[in-house]
Length: 465
Image (cartoon, rainbow, N blue to C red):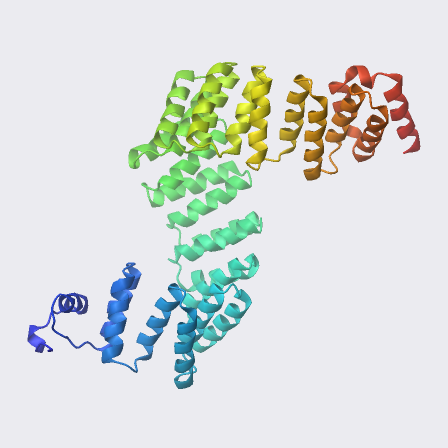
């Protein structure tokens, strides 16, 4: 039974939760149910939200807003047909409710019909007289369609009304970046900062745009203003460190990275950057220390393991480099970069069988870069397996059909394999593709390049070109 008013909890949520613990039934206004449901949905407590919707509709079976919240949950759980049937019934009663169009748009979005979703959201905006939340949804639909220009304009509408809507501000900048309109982003953020001079988020984003445009002094100033606006803003210190590092001011960069560690728990990225700076300063012991700290903090950060590996490779300590790249592979054997680096180290150690296996793993894991094919073929040449080297280059040519470097290398291989007809065809094709890369052939096969056979082909091509 319902309690008397003076026996009921004062707050709707506390009152609702008290009711769930007993067999008593409390009465709530429809608006109270809306607040309760929003509270649970916003906090990810979907089951409690559904329970509140069920009880709310038992007490207020004709409440449109409660039914719309029910639809929202149904859409979230992909019960789209049920959601649509409820919306059909609601639209007969209230065809000018913008939330009905919003939920229909969500359903179309779930079905990847973003064009239809956009049409419905535009209608919802008309009915709501410019509800900014709907503009945000519209922007997301344009993002799904990769229409970054229209997405940018939609999110700009949100920021124009609520300049504290940092989510939309980030999305505006993201669209500028995807459109590679960094100058446009700079102008937009400067205009925004005219009205919001202490917005650390905008200063931070402005600094990143200046950095992209290699306007380093301006970037430093922007990050300094971000720090003035919020002296605990880790992102600004970190980005400022990257700028200083780019400018060769490694000690100052280290100071900024160290500040991020003092403000909050250390991150692998900060340790990595400090290691890079110390290596530039020839502080090898400190560089190693921070590289080790990097992988200790995040064993799955490939950049950390690669940094240690490269450190030892630069010192020509390939045995040590091999030890660390193997540790990385043991942690993540599906990382193509690890295998490619491992292949290069084996080449330096003249372990050509192991290098062959590593390159095979590299390609199988999806690395199809040109130098992967070229270097793998070279390993097979060192193993005196010319047919396999040619086969590898033919595979590489499927990805780089017009790459002259492959044809020059194959021309040499066919010569070494006593197949002058194929060698001539490849050399002519390479010359037609890019005669400027003829130096590659000269470097790789100096004896063959200087032969009468090759010089006659080259001279004939130049005379006929």
